Amino acid sequence: MAEAAIDPLAWLDELPADYAVQVVPPIRYESHEDGLAHARMVVGLDAQGQRCYLRHTHTVTEDRFDIDEFPLEVAVLRERRIAWRLADGQWLTLLDRVDRLDSCRPRVVREGPHPAPSPLPSA
Image 1: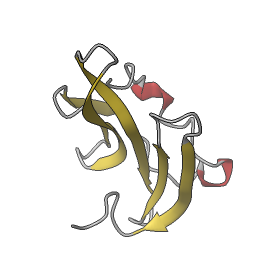
Image 2: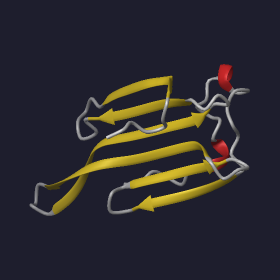
Image 3: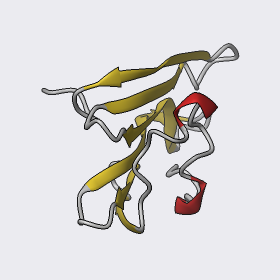
Image 4: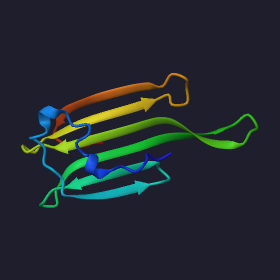
């Protein structure tokens, strides 16, 4: 259920054109994957080794049974968060959430992009 391999060089694909000259470009990438959690994170690092790009995806699943009572795992929610560090130290964040994946009418929500002090919300 994990997202297909992410091409880290596609880090500008979702970035609004107005911000292209304001972002700090990554020169190196690190990728972290947790198969059991259906999660993957790609982190872009700048020339000083500081995070300047983040792409995190995860899928929430539920255990269910098919018509013959065989267990199966069903995806119910998928979320993707992308963040770019701006030259002023702020982050530009974008969140895509698709829920009700198990229904005929999934719901798609896009939040952003909007400036934030951190690439991930504080817990």
